[in-house]
Image 1 (cartoon, rainbow, N blue to C red):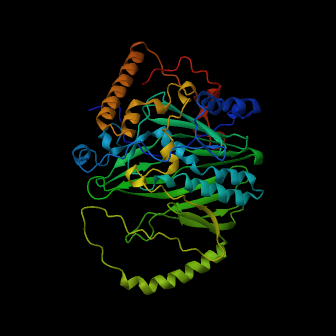
Image 2 (cartoon, rainbow, N blue to C red):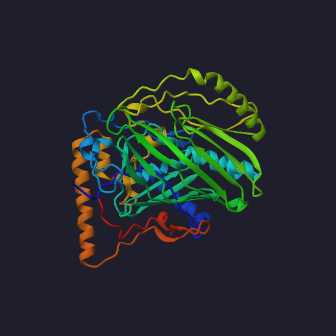
Length: 470
């Protein structure tokens, strides 16, 4: 059994104030080499209203997981961290974890909205909505992303959404993924270094978030930090897989002292709390300015605290009437997912902060991917000449799985892991330390915690001396 493959899922966190090298006008022009060259190399890049179109489905539907027995693998792991357990490839999805964390950027318009607002509490509302939207793609995403190889990278430039991102796998034990995203117009920087820690609890796998996310709104000289909620996949052994997220997320504006506290609720006995998020924003004097509520799978709203309290009191009266009518919970070997009540009860006077985009019709047979996720591993015409050779899109195991060739994917995955092990042994033999290329260890200036700081230069496209990892 390989000890290199680890069952990790998504979590978050990092920042820097030395990372603005990428924000000069010249470097932004340099960043767009990626897109302009790809269009020069091949005039057939599809466009719609002048915006580059991306694919909306995968080359092949997903492989059935019904025939795989996870219990034979996991029964010895109850209560342990899943740090060295090889999972069958059928439980993966055809994305690297570096691509999975790029999905935080799906709703970048919320950051752009925050940049445009003059009121700090309204900016916090937009940032809170972004923090919730960043984990919304996990809904029904029960496939495990591929663990990035040490030195693996991923980049994404989206002119339509106004950002570019680069990420790197900076450590293998423990597995740490660092990312750095920035506005193409110099309005924001968003970064994190992520160390997800997973535990198996008999029927479920729980991901503990490790690391801090930092968002800097440069025009407002503001920095916000937070960590993601816990994520739990239920019915790993038996029954239908389902996901819940829970825990307290605290977003701090280090410039104004404003704070947002969001409570991602566990589903509870009868599932009434499933997917619910409730919280509030307070100013530096701890005065509650507004209440935020909704579901991370659906939408988030903001309302005046007094209106919220009045609504809650009337709701409690209603609940008392219904209390004696609750059905008894039947015993089951599976932790059945409670029936989802699709709508959020909107309190009069509320303002909509964010609503989730609907998924494509064929999403269920394509790993429950969003439209954004569908496009992340696309190798567009002309890309190969510009991408770093360490980019996830060149990983043969992920590419084979995406194309529906599970046997080839499994063979390639084992080959890559063996290659990584051999390289590590060679370094140990020669007493060599691994050195990262695009990120360096440093200190987050806002939280004083250890972080991985983007050292710049990636978009200059000087990719000499990069490791041969594939």
